[in-house]
Image 1 (cartoon, rainbow, N blue to C red):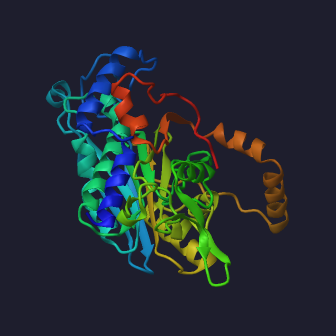
Image 2 (image 1 turned 135 degrees about the horizontal axis):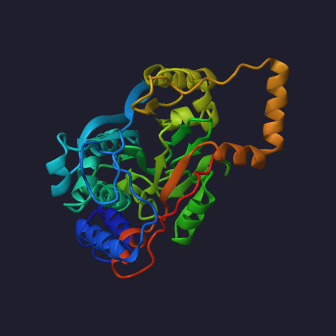
Image 3 (image 1 turned 45 degrees about the vertical axis):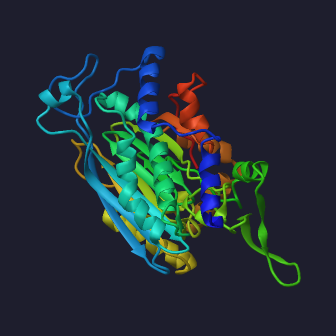
Length: 416
């Protein structure tokens, strides 16, 4: 067996905690059934599919409108994106008989490849199918949304496993957002960030950057697993560049692909699910060509007042103005708009003179906790699910054996 095949096998073994992986759809179905009996839901799920009828306790609610745009500047040709608004969600027999149009959901993704574009292209073309194949059949909409975080984990792992059988050393980040009505579910590995700019000015992170340089928890996980984290050494013993995982020298701690980096870089995604209020909001999904130049707040603020297509171009323009074209730079903007509202983007910020601007920035810097509290109170975003463990056995396998489940909770999203 070649060294690359051996590394891939070790990585897959590590990802499942050393156990044989049983069919993921069966695991998710079992978990869903267990949770339906064990958990008494305190809130009524509003019906967002439109139409008449539905399950007991559901109320008819109109779905939001989606408007989106994408802009990109290429340096290496390894950034890719996915824009789908017509994905069919399997419906139950009761909903299919009472709804004239089959329920749909939208998918928006950004993939930033490295060491070639093969992993990014394969992930773009196959990840959605792998997620859907992991979903049990015959679920209600509420059950479908409830099972979606685990199906995303299963889809990421299967995409990674199948790509590694091709023997190519390419790797990719993946940030994958599914919008179903007012509910947004985001799964991500790597550093292609997704933010939510809610009406009212609250900017929330829906992803975690898996960069060894900034993410202390990921550094500790890698080193605790036996990996080595350090900078690139050059002649004379000097160390340069960002922190990397060795062997392989990757500066990310999670990715899809990367068959040559060993078992410490895993494809298990961070997943977050939120529900917007009916005031709507804006998603910005972008590769690190944006985030290396702009903060989350700066990206959100620079494009307020613009429709989605122009907003994406504006974010790219601001990033290039700040840093120049040093990397592939891709941005996807999605506006989630109330159906009864005239299509208009988020209100632009009021202009301030230079003196007021300096005073405001100083106050914001001096009082970060107060600012965060103010922002979080106006976002009207319900956080439903969040889980970031890198160990697959903690995300899916152990759940079937009666181990603790990830907690569902309702709270305000943390703001930047």
